[in-house]
Image (cartoon, rainbow, N blue to C red):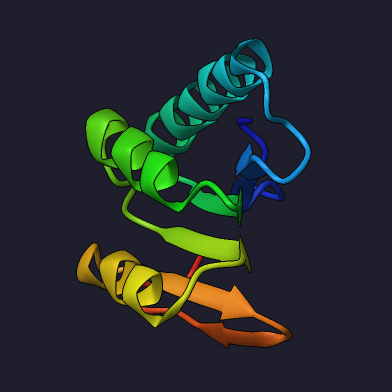
Amino acid sequence: MGRDAVVAVGETGLDYYRTREPEGRAAQERSFRRHIGWAHQHGRTLMIHDRDAHDDILRVVDDAGVPERMVMHCFSGDADFAARCLERGRGCRSRGRHVRIGRSPP
């Protein structure tokens, strides 16, 4: 991660579309938390994948600490979820459209 060429951690997050069993979801959350830590540690943008896991995505991000730069890359939420992401000062991307608030990646 020390290389300047690395600008983001991810795509990482939670995908509940096919993962329905608790063990699989718990494994995804552990991995997601590690990636959030790396984004904090190395000052990199966190690129998040969210599919049918909206409340858990925000719960984990809030608990682990919202990184300075975070982009919701894969976004399957509705307008309410987008507003909740934007409340955290971060952006969303859906169907090729990308909205981002905050500093630009290094």
